[in-house]
Structure formats: C-alpha cells, structure tokens
Length: 331
Ligand code: SF4
Image (tube, helix red, strand yellow):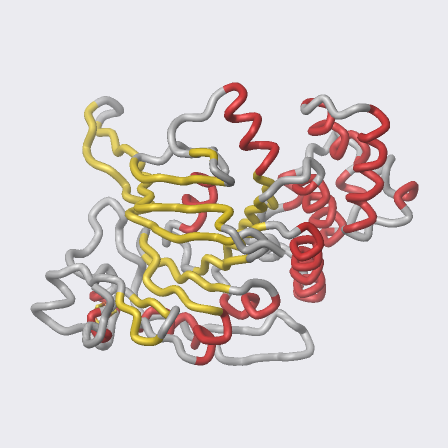
C-alpha cells in the first residue's frame, strides 16, 4: 500500500456569517478555525469531539457542502478550496464518498435498493454492464446478500443495520479515494455498531481508501482508525496514534473525554460516564487564550486565559495544543 498524502489540509477556516435584523453582518460563528492535518492514502483518522466542536463542519467542508472561508485543502493533487461548480463538483462527488449519521434519512424512501445504487452510476455515465457489476460487487462487500433478495426492496423494508450497509455501498460505488463517515453508528442499536464499524474498516482496507471518521464517542476509535484528532471549539487540540492517545492522553480535554467512555461492544459493559464539566463555548465569541480554559482544572491564570497555546510535541508524533507542554515544545 502506498503511503503518499491523499488529503492535505492547511489552516482551514469555515466561518458562518451572523446577521442582525437579517441584513447587517453582526460577526461570525467560527465553526472551524485554523485546522491543519494530513491524511495518507489507505489510512483512517478519527475526529472526535463534543457537539459544537466543529467536527461536522470539517466533514461538510471536505465534502464541498460548505465553502471554506480561508485555508487550503488538496485531495490527490486537486485543490478543493473555493466554491465548487460543474465539473469540479462532479469530480469531488466521484472521489469523496459520504456515510451519513442517519441512514433512514439519507436514503430516498421511494427508491428501491437497485435504483439507489444505480443512480450515481447513471449520473456518472457508467455503462449498463458496468453498472450491474458494480452494484453486485458493492452489495457483496457490505454483505447485502444474496443480492436478489434486496434489490427490489425499499429502505423502510430494511433493518437499521441493513440501511447503513446500503449507505456504505452507495458511498463506495463510484470507487472514491476518500470516504467521510459522520457519526455512522450513533443512531444504530448497540448490537450492530461494532459490526458496522468493522465492515467500514474492511471496505477501507480492501480499497486502500482514506477515511475520515467523525464521532463524539472515543470508545469506538479502537475499532477503526490509525490516528485520532481531538477537536474543541473549532480547533484540533490533540493528535496522536490511537493506542498512544487512549493510553496517554495529554490535553486536559482529551483526558476528560476519555473518562466519559462507554464501550459500544455489548459484551464489554462499561459503567464510567462523566462528561467534562461546563458547556462548550460560543463559537461566535470564543474565550480568549486557550478556548478550554473556563473548563480546565489545570488553567494557569495570566497565561491560559491570555495566550492561545501553540502545538507542542512532548513525545514524537504526539501533539497537544496546551501550555502544560511548553517545555521542549516544537513551537
Ligand atoms: Fe488547560 Fe491551560 Fe492547557 Fe488550556 S492551555 S488545556 S487551560 S492547561
């Protein structure tokens, strides 16, 4: 498997305008505020954070559903920043698959499985013979088999797990280079969550896909990705390999998230449930300095509330934006 960079993201910002009386600009909601990372071909990264951390805006920006305000995104050599239209948008749709959170809402209720999978192939002018072969292969990969039992069914005739398998089949049917999965198991029964994550992992490995897996639940990370990026208030505050982050979380926010873990595997009942104290900040008026300082028990007055922490690398390959690690930092 080649390990070249598939997606390069630099200082990405996606801000939403706030309007006063529907007319005057009253500021911005800085949903994504300076995010930088690389994803290598064949790797999966998990973006984890609470609601309001900016992780879904990151997904939407990479998918071309919202235009970035600033920054750079390059996928397989193609610049994705800027408003996408026409051929550029078609290229993006063909190269980035999307697995949505709610499979029932994501699937058109009036279309059969056959039509749902065939439509993107027709739009992309794939020949009839290839359409049938690709539908057969995609359904086989997600284990909607025997295919003939499912092709004529409508989404409401499928279980939640089968619906999400169909969403995954649709996401890979154009043979994309990257798949973005936004909370793909959060609406499923606990009994099928691990199964769907393992299926997604298998599909990723078979095709050497890059995957961005978005979740609020750190407990699912070990089933899936090589790297974890922790987001808070529009920024990535910690990056590390999965095992390293799970066993040695550095940022106080990551440590708090880890205490809130519950295992999605029904055989591993886990009882610890505690969320970081306080509320995520307003993204229209984020706190000065470190955005986590109002909730942080290690907050250093005069530093954390005044100066935004830089990215420090206390151990090789493990980065944290926190002043606790300024000794020996990279910046
Ligand atoms: Fe806490 Fe300060 Fe680190 Fe922010 S920079 S996480 S406030 S110790």
